[in-house]
Image (cartoon, rainbow, N blue to C red; front, top):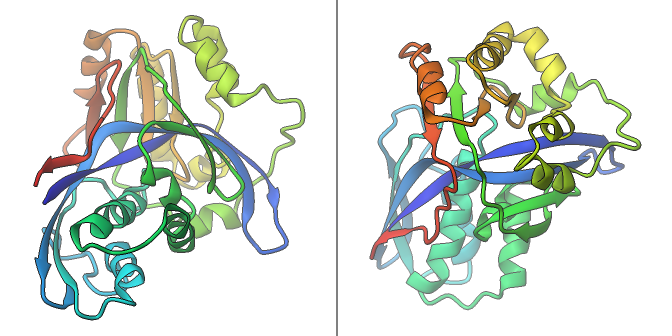
Length: 287
């Protein structure tokens, strides 16, 4: 079986404060874009094997795909899987690539290997693997709170050309949280309301496109700010760093402007363009 594992962007990201357990409460909108990894699964008699197209990726328990498979197969020692990961989503970019991969494993293996696990158990496993993993268990966009695991899914038909650019900069999420400058978000407009208003009123994007990580991350990595400025200079309705960086997305009203902006970035940047109304639908490519 071969499936696609899509990246996400954060359409707005507010960090509300640090919790007693050391994590931070947040408020964000997760939305998938047309950049994906591919995972291929083959049933074997026992054990877990992961291979990838990248020499710099771990293939043991340091990889979330393996940890996800281990969590599901702990009670099924006679069942196994061989996985091949073709990686396109850059790491350390705020796109949730590893989380998306892990969720793909959680979605596929129960059916492929006839595992008895409830939806609630799957969500518990996903949350233990990482804060972004639960979002990828279902299709659609979602409003997220808590660590990112408290999710309300909804359908959103994005009217924009979404240009995604990842500069050759790696940002550690742990570093981003350690250097976070908390803002007072009291009275800030509701993100989902701003999102739907922005479909027909570009001025509403100002309420939506705010990322509390952006100031400190761009101060440490000015190249991220350069990408954001380039998008605005080429006519983007709005541009924002996604997650803890280093990726930046711009929302464009027309294809010509989006493609002209994309052409400005050299080969050291990962560039992806998502068409308006994109919806990934079913993740299975073939079975």
